[in-house]
Length: 353
Image (cartoon, rainbow, N blue to C red; front, top):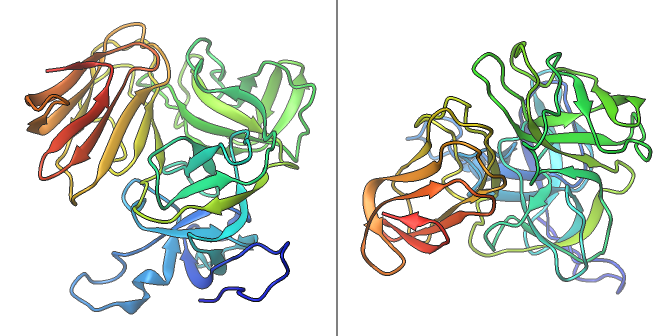
């Protein structure tokens, strides 16, 4: 670990640490992405000191163990290993963003569950370790198709052809499409990730790899942003403190059900198309005092509802008994929780029951 206490006034303060990344073999990663510690490495009963020197791609299981941000590009070897220098929280450094920023105003938490090389500062989450506070005003996005993600079927049945608003300012080979979530029609599902593309015309681009699990047999809706690849590194302060838990974009299946994946340690942006049945998040008990979790609907469901169903009854905002927060079906409905041996609603505009 190191820092630069003696430096020119124009040089930002950086707390550096050399860590070992383990992930997908022979894969390139960018400067400015978030990494998390692999704290359960090895045999649980062994005193394994490397657990705070080993890092990996952020996921919904490690997102409450933030390590920091990569200070350089790196590529894993054939075994999926690379040595990486990171900036720890408390530093000022360049961060890959997936959102426009305004100096001393924009605060973005990191993306979890998006796959390799996707862990950018992406959206507003809980405060604390894992947030990038913008120290630079910057236009990062060429297109933002998140809140209106399910207003149109953007991804064709071939899994690669994507409809956009206006590709006239895109540059193939430089700019990127970051798919955050998408439809699962029971035959095929959208695969979140970072994609290169070619340009067909003013409203059509073609991804260079498939963005579906299997041929869906129909167009699929998806939430995505198009990122200016020449202008997506933003100078930020890396907030320290309690873990923010990151951001997860949850994609309920069209059939609904009770098995939708969510991030128990951070904020979940929920996007669903026409649900045949209710989408129920089976909300497990927390694991530590002060744990936060939230659910925010990015779009109207146009069908059934999203429900957050507590595994063990908790408390409403007013202090009454809480079994679930239900009837969430409108854009921008939300519920946030804090855990103190049981969950208690800290704020919601939905129905507590």
